[in-house]
Amino acid sequence: MELLNFILLIIIALLIFFLLKKEKVLGINTEEKNNNEKIKIIENKEYRGSIYDLLNYIPEGVIVVDKSKKILFSNNSATNWFQIKLNENLSGFLRNPDLLNFIDKAFNGENLSDFEIEIRTQSVSRLNITIYLDKRDLFFDETTCVLFIRDLTEFYKFQQLKSDFVANVSHELRTPLQSIKMGLETFENNSELKNNSEVKNFLPVMISQSERMENLIRDLLSLSKIELQEHIRPTHEIDLIELLEFVIKTYEKIIKKDNISIVLNKTDNFKIIGDRDKLIEIFTNLIDNSIKYSDKNKTITISTKKEGETNIVSVEDQGIGIPKELIHRVTERFFTVDPSKSRSVGGTGLGLAIVKHLVSQHRAEMDINSVKNEGTSISIKFNAL
Ligand code: ADP
Image (cartoon, rainbow, N blue to C red; front, side, top):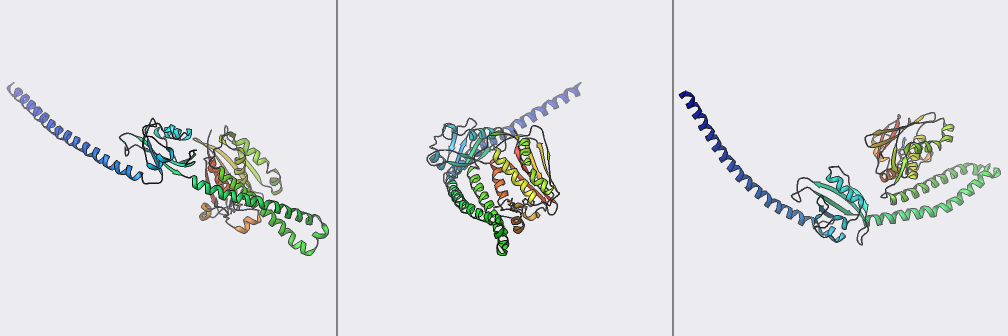
């Protein structure tokens, strides 16, 4: 019994010893922790102060908002552009539903790419905005949304001048070209003239060159129009299957002539928000290319499939293909893998550049896969409706 009491006594003594030790350790830790916190707050203040100073010197606008969109910080550029007042709501200065929606999405953890919006103020009208969700409390002691804003107004003014110039030149060239073409057609319809040996040599070349010029003018006009509208989001509900069937129908004659088959693999409920005419232009360009760069008797397959939130359309051919190292260049203006081949089939080198702009206007993505001498597959990924 005495031994038991002795053991109990030792256990109690050990417990008291450890408790005291723990208290001491905890005491030191709390003190250290408090000191560290204080240092962190001072460091944060200093470090944030320098960040804010720095941000006031950059030409881009920077605005920091909290979850309720109250403005916590705005650098000099943003303050001047939008006459911003701190602690007021962002919606009072940048009244754009898309932007406010994007901020909500950022706070809800969605990954966002940068986007462009049009805002009408005296000094700025076109902006590119990148949204960064500051979860690490770099700017404030809470999660905030940081807007990095680039003023693209001047850039778009320049772009507009360039597009207007191209559109005017193309338009002015159209009328004289029509007269030349009419003259050539008259020659062609006059059997006496047509059989003249000199005319016989030159007439086909002149006709094909005037057709090429007509194609170039058409594509240049189209490209300059598209460039100016690229930021305008399409708004119509489009049934892509119906649209693809419509486009395929326009190829009936060519298909018969060249014995080409166009196969459409359909998917149910395949809808997107888009612009009908522009979508027709996208698929017409892709199918045109598949026909131009394939031999007769080949099959073009248009597949449609759903992948999560995206609707994907792929136009696949069994044509000459594109060398791997040149695939990334085919959407450049006037780039052709083989200029003489492209010219001989009526190409301008502008088709895929047009497609690229139209795809971007639809906030879609284009993916090109090709194997030389085997074929090409171009897929467009749209956001599903
Ligand atoms: P083009 O009017 O010359 O066809 P595009 O801009 O439509 O111009 O295409 C650029 C180039 O990419 C073409 O000249 C051609 O070399 C290549 N290309 C485009 N689509 C295909 C395809 N389906 N198969 C093979 N080559 C292609």
